[in-house]
Amino acid sequence: MDRLAVIKILMKQKKLRNYLEIGVFNGHIFFRIRSNFKIAVDPDFQFDFLRKAGKIVLNHYNLYNQYFEETSDDFFKNNAATALKGKKIEISLIDGMHEYAYVLRDIENTLEYLSDDGVIVVHDCNALTAEAGSSYEEWSAKKIAGTWNGDVWKAIIHLRSLRNDIDVFVLDCDQGLGIITKRKPVKMLPFSEKEISKLTFSDFNANRESWLNLQPEGYLKEYFNLK
Ligand SMILES: C[S@@+](CC[C@H](N)C(=O)[O-])C[C@H]1O[C@@H](n2cnc3c(N)ncnc32)[C@H](O)[C@@H]1O
Image (cartoon, rainbow, N blue to C red; front, side, top):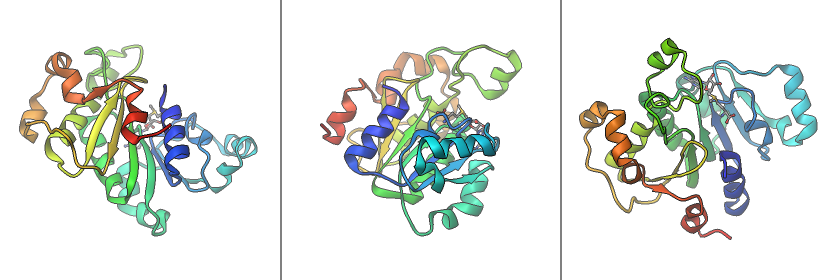
């Protein structure tokens, strides 16, 4: 199961509509979402006017899209309140800059606008190798081939340690899909912010299942009590 399948299941069965995607790239996921309230945020969209027009023909919901070609920090600072027009975000895919501080800000800013039964899906939570889990600096300097997940895993540990107002688990599919809801957490982790900043990839590798609250993909339906 990939992020698109997870989002489609949640939208259909939980009747979630208002969609925000942070980190959109060429719109591979964004343009497929069927909702007349969709917001795309990315400082460097990889599509032009013609692609946008073609996507309206393929999926008429794309007619209503709002595009913000800027960083997510700028979006939340300058445009989120106006773009949302008093509406709540009901489902969000967070897939922008894959570094701890950035992802954490994206999640915490999105939570400010999330409806009580809304869901945040976070891509790239489960880096499997030290290379995939390296910093952006190391990754770009070494020109490593393959997928870069960064240290999104630290944002998951942070939320599971320091936020007692949200519930967080990670589905073991599609590079690790973090699922965040406004439910109370069943079990929290004991780390302080200082301890989290010092964690290394090998610490994570030895503890990934418990630190991520890693769950098989079938858990999605169990958790939300879906068909
Ligand atoms: C992995 S791609 C997103 C892929 C897309 N969500 C999908 O599922 O096909 C990551 C994107 O994040 C964008 N990005 C990088 N820094 C960002 C930031 N600070 N705020 C928002 N997006 C950012 C990049 O421009 C890039 O297009």
